[in-house]
Length: 123
Image (tube, rainbow, N blue to C red):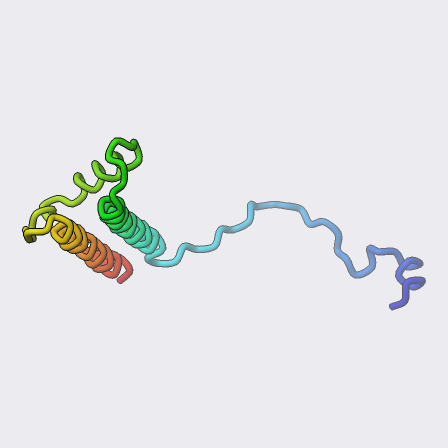
């Protein structure tokens, strides 16, 4: 159809115009397990965040960060609270090795348990 034919016949030809809106649009049905998948993502995110806090604590300690700094104190306190009973599993002579082993073990356990719980939720 050329422009002239379109213009002469009017733009309404073939177009039904606005339709009355009798009902609100139907929502898409929720998929089974959609909520559980969201909870699984949250669990994985939280457990990974805890592991990052442990890694940051280890890094700041090994780097000799200023213990008087507010951020360093916050990370230290948060890591101490979240480590639960894993803070003294290994007690080698060198405290830095013990720090790496204990907080590394705690991070590994958090990640493994988080992934396990997430897998159960996604079933």
